[in-house]
Image (cartoon, rainbow, N blue to C red):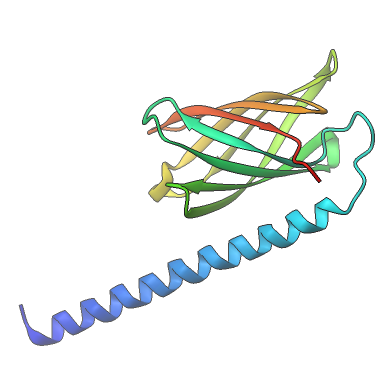
Length: 155
């Protein structure tokens, strides 16, 4: 190995680590701010919008971790779901999914899809149901499948 190539590799690896660290911390701060902002708004009675927290569990790997979500209504009866998950309890992952569905019998049944990037499994599809006090969904990707269960956080 040439002395110059080791130096270039070290520079490349250092730059990559900075980009990953900056992207992760920016996403967390953005979600944290949105999470705190959502806390102060009153959620209409019977609504599914607002803050949720719970746990994700992989059926494929037997891994699990905490998850938080903010549901926000968007046009056409859809909801934007902003998820904040943790892998191995400390590696943050923030992602956004547009959920499309309809209400039947007091439950909003939905489906959605999001590309989380090749490093976390690519495209994930979600389907589930939400009531004003419980969120349940299944997820699948080419490499993983599992469940997300959440309830409303304590104020």
